[in-house]
Length: 298
Image 1 (cartoon, rainbow, N blue to C red):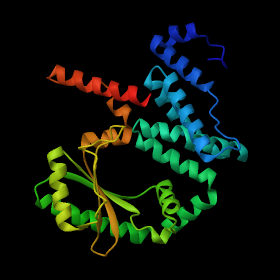
Image 2 (image 1 turned 90 degrees about the horizontal axis):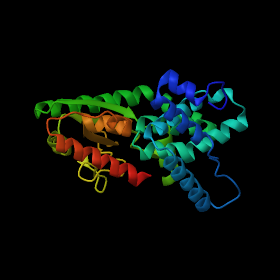
Image 3 (image 1 turned 60 degrees about the horizontal axis):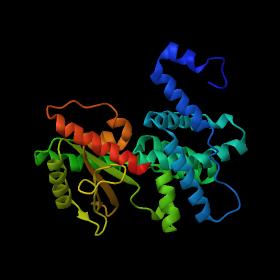
Image 4 (image 1 turned 30 degrees about the vertical axis):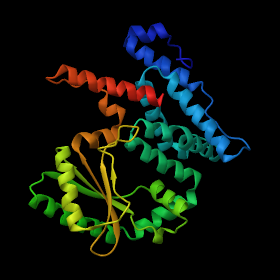
């Protein structure tokens, strides 16, 4: 609004009070100085970044303002090649420090993953393109192996009478990069580069599918996580297990319901629409739970 001839009253008249409030919220967030740089220790920089994230979230009275800002930042990152090199570095660092953690807190993995990868592309271009190149070189063999696992799992799940959607994917570049850095390993030494996802109708089917999978493959001790019984802070729910495949290569399987998958991909945005149900009290309790969660992350 500040950079245009249109006033707040014009916005209200043209688009309504709701849109005017959202525009006002986005405009206020634009004024927050997001840089946490300077010659300081990593611990102090992280503390500053955390304070900025909290301020950013607290100033948005309507969570839709944050969703708009995330969409805006994603668009900026997708077109970052048109900026000057020094601007690319600054914006990518800002994205990784502020926007990626916010997307994670809101459970919007679909946005976070793309922001992560794009940030890596501009902050560590040599590392990024080396990863892209090496993963592309073996794409055909890897895709063939992933498909063989998917086919094998699909057959056993079907025989168990469980209706499921099953697919496999290579993990995103930033995730692989973090594993390499944290474990001090090369790409060749990172084995669980891909994950198989099983999406079913009910929680009961999640655990039934897990039983089938653990009969098929050898689970790696200490690598099972039950985020259904104990969801993450951002309400993410899924069963995670890492297994040894028939060729001896480890891989991860994630098992969740369709509703959990929607929440995992889009986070709070997936819950935004009010869901009607025959039991009004149940819906009221669910909505109150979401509000409590929002207050916690703020």
